[in-house]
Image (cartoon, rainbow, N blue to C red; front, top):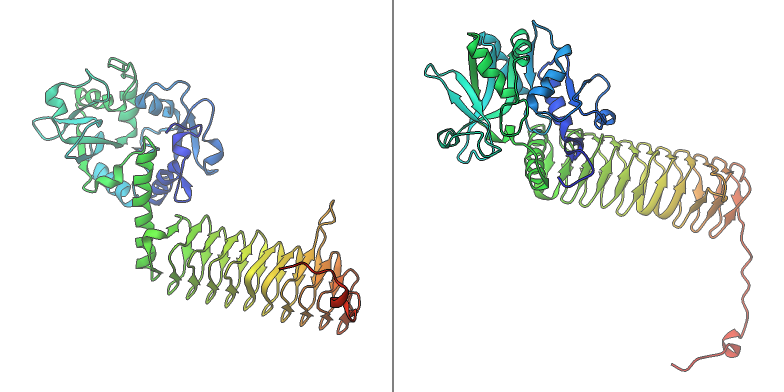
Length: 443
């Protein structure tokens, strides 16, 4: 990957690469999920709390990695082994493998596939009875014969084992290969020598087992993952106008009858209700949106939006911006850490920060809450049914009572009582004949 970030922690549609395999295992009903990490525990902060960790002290191959988790394997368990860098495996595919394994009674069942170009994959060598005899690695010259390299059936790296048989075979592994490592597929000949049959479960969709070894691979997998996400939303009743220009993370929830316009990015834990219109050219990150809301040409990060709300164009809603039902944040409006009451409108060209605004209020163009005094943030409180006139600066902490007004161009530094008019500006003075006395420049 040419990166300081561990490969399996590179992001893929809203979760790290390894998170996809974990989610698939959980979806398949795994009783416990174990991740093999290195001694630096580089994956620790990215793993869910209920995932168990086994430590591989040295990078000594896949067989050694599984052996490091042996203490967490029960003899009576069905054990599935997945690669952390194969993110497109699905819960359905894992379930099918587990069922095929348990129904067969085999000691091990490996998921295989047939490829036109099997370069780089371990080849599956079958016995005369159709079972799996062994897997031959081909990553290093000398690991396989030309006849073995010609085999098109390959090992996906995904296995189901009977726990007791796996534990016994792991103890017999040796590093007698070109890389001097312990290969997990080498347990198969030991199982066969002990009279335990090895089965194969063919995976017909090769995309499910695509691995990520570089950023080109990651781009390929991301495209396929995004197509899968779009398809799921489309089948659930969401219209995605132009999937090619739309990015939706795996954890995003969208209600039916919602339309996602081109150029829209939905990220993180974003949740959107029914019958909404989102986009074009909008980004929502970790934002909750109610039903029947319209968001156009805007950027929302950590916001909470009610139902029937209008946002944009060109609005910026920052963390803890909460717009209640039927509120409006219009053109070139920025809101952060504020409550905007039901039916309240902030139509255009305003900054609302650290404020609490009641229902039914109208905030005129160019209104600013001056919430920072250079040392601390302070809150502004605007009551219900208030009419804040254009170009008003509210110097926090300050309160506008219910039903109050401000005069255009005012700088309000003191509280305004309910139903009162607050005006804080110099009276206009006209200078007669000024144009005759003013210096003029030649045009």
